Structures are given as C-alpha cells and as structure tokens.
Amino acid sequence: MLNRARKLLAAIDAAPTGRSIVGGVGYVYAPVRLWHWVNAAAILVLSLTGYLIGTGTPATSGGASGNFLFGYIRFAHFSAGYVLSAGFLLRIYWALVGDAHAMQIFYVPLWRGCFWRELCHEIRRYAFLTVEPARGLGHNRLAQLAMFFMFTQTITFMVLTGFALYGQGAGTDSWQYKVFGWVFSFLPNSQDVHTLHHLGLWVIVMFVLVHIYAVIREDIMSRHSFYSISGDHGFGD
Image 1 (cartoon, one colour):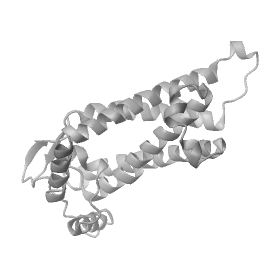
Image 2 (spheres, one colour; image 1 turned 135 degrees about the horizontal axis):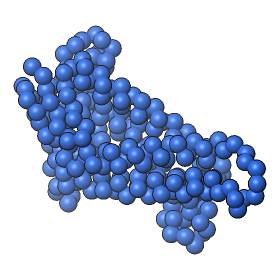
Image 3 (cartoon, helix red, strand yellow; image 1 turned 180 degrees about the vertical axis):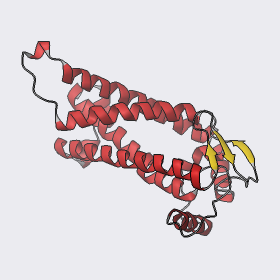
Image 4 (cartoon, one colour; image 1 turned 90 degrees about the vertical axis):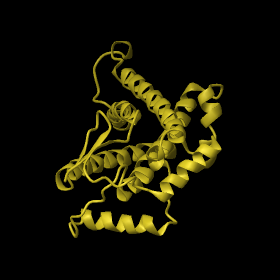
C-alpha cells in the first residue's frame, strides 16, 4: 500500500493535471462519481438540518411528546453525518488504490515550481486576463487547491468535531466519545466546538457555490464538457 501511494504521488508530481488531450472524451473519475452524488446529498441534508439545529426552529404549541420535529431534524443530521463519514473513508481508500487523479484532492505539491506556474495561469484565466484553458485530464491547479483546503480539510474537521459533539451527548462510555473525545483536549469548551462546527457549515456552503460556478464557467468558456454523472471529460476543438 505504501509503495502504491508513493507511485501515485510521483505520478501527480510528474503530470499534475493529467495527459494532454487534443480532442474527444477522456474517462478519468471512475467510481468517484457515485461518491460525489452521495456526498452531495449528504451535505445538502447536513447543511439544512445543521442550520436549523444551530439557529433553532419556530416555537410550536403543545407538549414535547406531540412535537418531535427537532428530534427528526437531529436524526436526519446524524444519519447524514454517518453517510458522509463512511463515504469519506471510502474516498480515502480509493485515493490509495485508484489512479493519480483520485489523489488530487488529498495532495497539493506546494513545493513544486510547475504547480505555482499552473496556478497563476488559472488565476489569470478566472480574472479574464487570458482565455487559453489548461488542456488535460483531472482538476486544474486552482480547483485542486480549493478542494484541498476548502473541502477536504473542512470535511475532516467537520467529521472530527461532529463525532466529538455526538459522543458528548451519547455519553463518555460511547465509542464516539472514546474515539473522538480528544477534540475536547484542544477545545475544552463545548460551545466553542459547536461554534466552530457551525462555522464549518458556511465554509462548505461557500465551497459548493464556488464549485457550481466554476463547473458551469468551465463548460461555457473553455469548452471542457464534464459529464458529472458518467465521469467523462470532453474537450472541444
């Protein structure tokens, strides 16, 4: 497994955005498409229910036994959290056994000069200072950087803090608290963990908005057609 990981990292260093494509369609994202849409559904549920948990729901009349709305909201949030976490673990596994493109959102070679040159090119392109797109399979450097810092790191943080908070409610004897309770060693105040977890929600929301914009913009301006269901990546002339 370690040798496999080293080879993948070497492949990413050698050809970060994949091989050059002149025309046609390339298949690159493999089972990641299934993970993408399951992950998107989980994030949607987590965002909606997380917002309601953080801000509260309108008061309703009657006893608690007849108004279990907040309980259903919490149940949906926790269930989606388990789905997100399981999918993220499988995504890490695929990063190790898949192709070089599968590793991109977990690995950013900041120490390589070619990375910064390609990143500057993408920044210029998004600033409308150049129109020439990077022609290759895989994520461009700006997308890779955004996914690593805004998505991968944030999801990791949300999983850790989410299970820590869940474990606190489940009790110190629960496996969630035993595995994730160390979070409170760094953040002893539970309210601070709640606040940071809620802040992470808005980081994810901002990432999703930027992600959707970038995908639509790429399809229109660079004539790169990314088929989000099949995983194919098409290139115009």
